[in-house]
Length: 250
Ligand code: HPA
Image 1 (tube, rainbow, N blue to C red):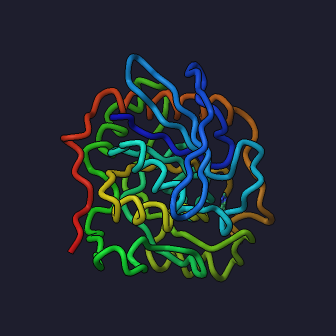
Image 2: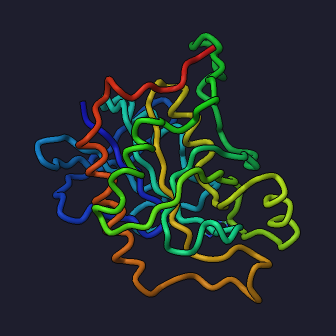
């Protein structure tokens, strides 16, 4: 079965992988996906903001995207998120493996369990991110010249505005490490459909209040992004569908 890579801000292609665009229509809308092959493995690439970055975080059709991957037979997703760092433990341009989240999004379609056609399910979130793929990310990072920190808690905000300094202070107190706008509801929608999900955060700035004003990293970022994609593809090659256990439904 194909595995999927979901790209966030700045990730609009898979270098070295030829892809073909395909439109997937489902009950939730239309998703554009890109079908490719790497070392004989089928890979589906999806860039959540669109290749021209025209879809803001609160307008992404998360359900159409995840349903499209499900319909293609995907059982493993590796996802990337550009984030702000809210603690010195997660420096800008060092990657972070996300293991947990705090969800502050609102007004989004956040569940598949809201029509009468599916029995109600409650996806269990003790381990929202697949430990097998997450551990592999850590194990293979140095091979790809990547400095990677483990154990990040991702704070999901609604965007598209950035946070105020007081909000960032609150997120620090609550135990957040990085802040972004899209990991929720993506991670738990995948869980609802029985898909294993692992995620890498790329801090591109220090969050509000940590510097005089927010400055986005530019130097070396293309190289970091390319290394990150190569790492994710390597992780997909070195794991398989059956050893990754998605969250269960209660
Ligand atoms: N806040 C929210 N989302 C982000 C940030 C940030 O500082 N940087 C990149 N995505």
